[in-house]
Image (cartoon, rainbow, N blue to C red; front, side, top):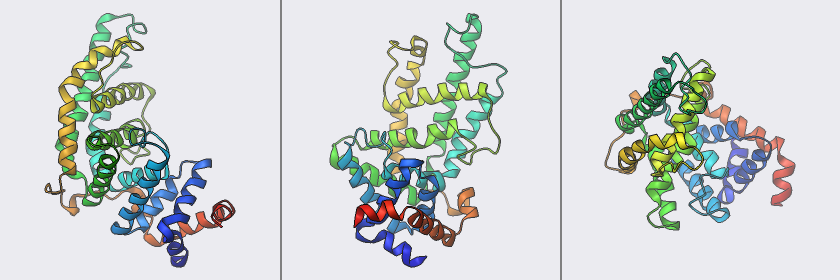
Length: 297
């Protein structure tokens, strides 16, 4: 297994890159990427992400790189999912609990809710949930481990090299688009809670996620498609700079992360030792040998 593992990482990870691409045609390569994160040591994982980001930038520009499903986005997302569980729980769990306490669907579209008073109450509840998420991000920004910060700093550097001045916004877009927002919408899959959320809570979370994405990108709702979202523009103007400041803090190498003893181990890592990850990688090579090596030879 070790020999196959070493074979996959030679020549700038050529075999490994192709494996992720082949698997991605049929499914999202979550198990494969999780195995990569568990089996790779920190330095080698950073080298892999460096190579994958370079390949992604050849296929798409820095502005769209993290919106596309590429081997780079898949692996970096797995790094966050496995190595930033503590941060994710600290941010998302209170928001989910807050929305779960509501005894109604948090619909703010007045065309779907006849009672104007109920709409007003729902707007306040959604506003409070978004504020809670942003405050939790600020309070827990030190929960990113050094390994995660190094990966995010790599994303920052690659973005800056491609388009000067885009680094902070690209890291922010990646954190929210690929990690925080998906975790809010699928909290059980992201190791945040161990139960399924109701459809009513999910509706509230969808609104929170939509607003958070606009806040981090600094884009106000113009009302052309969803007039009822314009009332949330105060959140964009109030908190955009604060989130930018938090991202700068995370990237600042002088700011120390929390002690390792306070970090939370993901359920995947708890159940899979490195030797299990080696086996997973070997099986992926074997199962996809024809597609992988037929192209490389």
